Amino acid sequence: MKPWRDERLRPVLAACVTLGFAVGVFAVSFGVTSVSAGASVGQTCVMSLLVFTGASQFAAVSVFGAGGSAASAFGGAALLAARNSVYGLAMAPHLRGSLGRRLVAAQLTIDESTAMAAAQEDESHRVAAFWITGLSVYLFWNVGTLIGALLGSAIDPKVLGLDAAFPAAFLAILWPLLRERRSALAALIGASVCVVLIPFVPVGIPILCAAVGILVGVPSPTVAAPVGFEVQS
Amino acid sequence: MTWTFVFALAAAAYAFKVLGLVLVGDRRLPSVLDRCLALIPAALIAAIVVKDTFSIGQHLQFDARAAGVAAAAVAAWRKAPLIAVIVIGATLTAALRAAT
Image 1 (cartoon, each protein chain N blue to C red):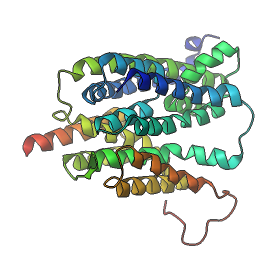
Image 2 (cartoon, one colour; image 1 turned 30 degrees about the vertical axis):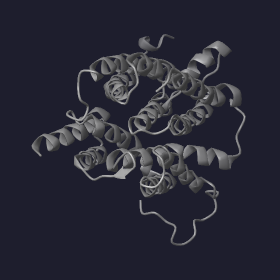
Image 3 (cartoon, rainbow over the protein chains, first blue to last red; image 1 turned 180 degrees about the horizontal axis):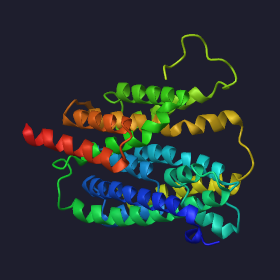
Image 4 (tube, chains in turn brown, orange; image 1 turned 120 degrees about the vertical axis):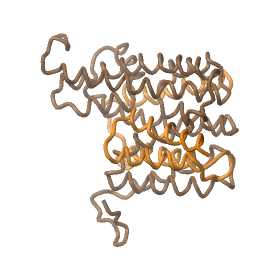
């Protein structure tokens, strides 16, 4: 059945497209900041078309903008991109079909499409939510990037506070993750390591070092946490 | 930024996506690896937030961004939509800069 013929699916579709639009606004600020960090309009747009994973693109551009090396920009961006393989693992049982179809689905496997799919209870809605969200985010992300990149040479991002739009957007993405105790602890460790290292090591390296926070995942969850290790929730 | 960088990052990003969805598929990873990978967004995004809020290059700096991001944090806590969180953070930062 065509998803848009299903009455129960309409609110899901509306939510997926709205999310795509919100991401498009975010993409405008990516385009502006990427160009002001020294990338060309073409490089900025090709990044959105091919890399298509927002946090990695933002991380790369933010390291370049601060004068960091290509190696540290690449390291941080690639580490952030690694989470998409976890999303792929989560989506794999739901996304069957030909190899070609799965190779296209792979490019759309990002935070938003996985989250919208995970939020559905009905299996067919799950698959529809993944595709609709993935495609609408892809469309809006790239249109938004182009608009931002063209605006970028015309406006000063500091006057509009766009340098604060970055961390604000990241914070909004981070917030729901903090409800889970291990994620909150990983975030606390990551942020602390980063802020302590900033004055002492080259730009971009603190972000890489923040990855030690993931070691919170090493102890098995079935083993009780040691006394004094609890985080208030 | 160079074109080599753009294409290398594109290749790496797509490789990770294909790795999970197509190559690993239904096979399970060791659960310890699974648990650690799941924490990457929290650890790295938190680091990026503090870096972009409190530093310029290698210098720690406390300025209008801190107020903007704090307001954005309140908005995120009140479950405001993504657009509202971004607009609040940027607008307050811009307003404070204009006022000083």
